[in-house]
Length: 112
Image (tube, rainbow, N blue to C red; front, side, top):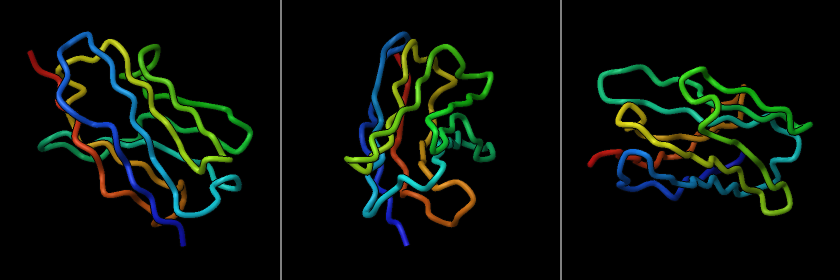
């Protein structure tokens, strides 16, 4: 079992940047990893994924603004978020894809 802990959320103005981290309790090198978000009143959605070969995919809503990366040695997955918009306000979660291993989430609020 892998425990995941997200960090790096906060309040940021539109156009600003944040970097989220997802620290794992064990090795993640064999897992595909993903970042999800859930906005108030909406379903949780997958917004970025990175597989074990470092190939990445993004939802259209974040493509070109967000970058997912991983450091297997540090057992950490990152989400660099640039040019943030009001619509990016949500709780952000990381997950070992295909598993029940989720983090507790970190709140990102974009507001002026």
